[in-house]
View (cartoon, rainbow, N blue to C red):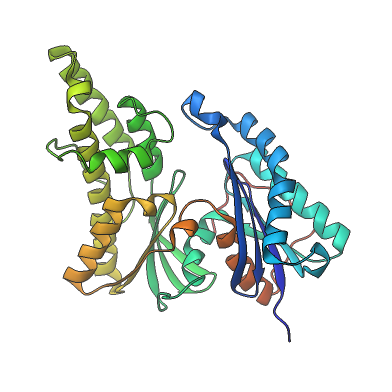
Length: 334
């Protein structure tokens, strides 16, 4: 039996992405980003959906060309159903439904957050089941116990802001613009974590980052009243201190999850898993505590269609298809 070719489409936020899978192998993974949001300090949903409309056909064509196949060879079309921005999701869902209808092939609806975890099943080395995965992105922060492909149990998640959202909002306070995460990562290497910001007290394995954002804002306002040049003079140390605190919040919960479950196969996923301080903290914890640690290839950390494709492949094997009346879901827990 030949392996299926699956076209995967991701359009949950501000990246239009398409990938072609041959079974579990990624043949192509293409993406078009949207710079239009930088001027507004965050993603503007209406602008995002318009940009998706402009990008989706060229991105899909590029993915097919790079994979070396034509659309008539496809066995299924997969798409991100949610969670995400409704207008952005609608573009990807509508395109996928139209193409699947024209080719008379199945549709596969993929959960975006679950797909971040599944990115670990694309390349070797892969974590052994069961494993724990800390998923950290702009919209989601979760600790998940993964028993098998598509079999996941959420152990804890953010009760307010996600970690990536905290990076961006605090970065805006620090005058770094949008997106702030990569800039914080870069600047933090030049500074020292000399300021101690609060670590929220949240029971269990859940997270909270809104209090940290408020703490940073109030601290800076106080210091600026004392010294109007404080932010300019201390920006790199502030950035280093913020990053150190966010990473410590994440790692402390992850260590608690390992202790509670006894699982020492530990992975991170999502856009914030590209953060160098988080990667280093995971590696150090692994060496100290005897964990086997895993981080996806950089191209599969941020939003991409390869992670949608690998998830869709396992759903294809399970016969998990949807009908043409499927609609996007802005909120969708798996």
